[in-house]
Length: 503
Ligand code: ADP
Image (cartoon, rainbow, N blue to C red; front, top):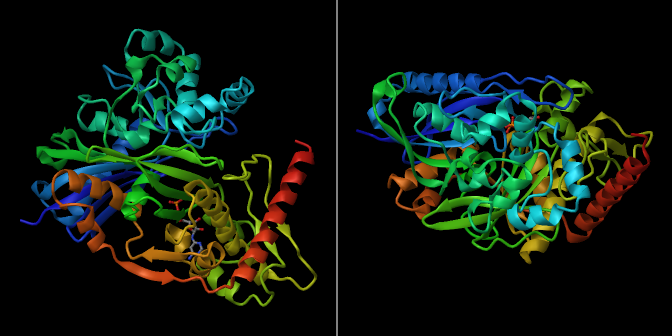
């Protein structure tokens, strides 16, 4: 009887169930979107019950669709949108408020206050994170402060908080567990990434009772067992892996050794570098976070996010009407005659992320002259994905004390060959695109599979990894540095504009 590993992939806009075989190939996949709610400008919420029902549905559908018997599922892993947080009654499982999404900005003023109090160093020292409303801590505090009766219940020990991983495990076990893993805990701003424990000072600052916190486990190992009549027909399936989505993609890309890194070109862009077991804070504005806990060890990660990657190609399609589909961008960019270095697009639609961090910057096109045309703008927009990668790669190389030689790429826009080649050219490193671009789902499957001996060790997983295409740098050093200097000039000019612009 052939056995399989199931990944429950809790994305920001959809839940998916993905079944992997021993060769780490996907044999079945099923996904369904759930709603996003925007009750006020800058607020982003999701309905935890809808996420749960969607999850149950996709698990059941993938089993039906694949014809695989539940007894053939050796273990399951969970990967999830990070930071999004649910506060719920531990006795009834009833959420006291919607899930507050990672993109929610409601706690930005509170974060400004924390910065004014000079607490940035404490945040970095304890959690590796910068002060920002993306992370869960400020949002939990918001719920306790604003939902009538929540604080009293929390003080009485009746409320739990969870990210989506823990919420789903609670539901899958009918309220029997309240768990998370190191990688998810490290995004709450309440977890000390050095001691691997909930941090009393951070909890006190956010006025969060410790009784609300989930138990934190290594990312690979036994979490709980699903044993529900309405999932897998009551067959017991253990959950043996749990990891936040970006860390999961890094594991799924087999970045197992220090210095190995991946860049995901989705809607946003997220670059992570494995730095091994020593949590050395970044000196270059990157986040220091936990990658995963495995085999009694913890791997740490540097992380940098660019807010607009694939979204800028969508902008070409949806707002500018320059292309019909996002893959068309490759065709038109190839027709651009103007050499690089004339037109630059800085796609700061929602500000600039790592390592610049300017939330007031806005997208700008530089260097248009009378002959510049649609193709040049499309190519410059594609190139912006490369330049932004180089921004983070530079910061990572400085922190790591060694240049990046190989970058593993994935996400929708990594399928664009012009993007992939320019990334290699401008970073000056090989860009490697795997056949399996579902790296996020793969990471959680690997962690679950390793825990139950489905795969012997990481080396075996590496053997199954297949490369679609390797992009070698073809640009000479002088050109690379000139083009990049042109980009930095544009970004710095934009930041001067943003300082002077009327807000
Ligand atoms: P997410 O997980 O953030 O939804 P995906 O990894 O699914 O993102 O990638 C979707 C993004 O990739 C979209 O923003 C889209 O513009 C971009 N994209 C997809 N295919 C291409 C392509 N061939 N060329 C350029 N961009 C692409």
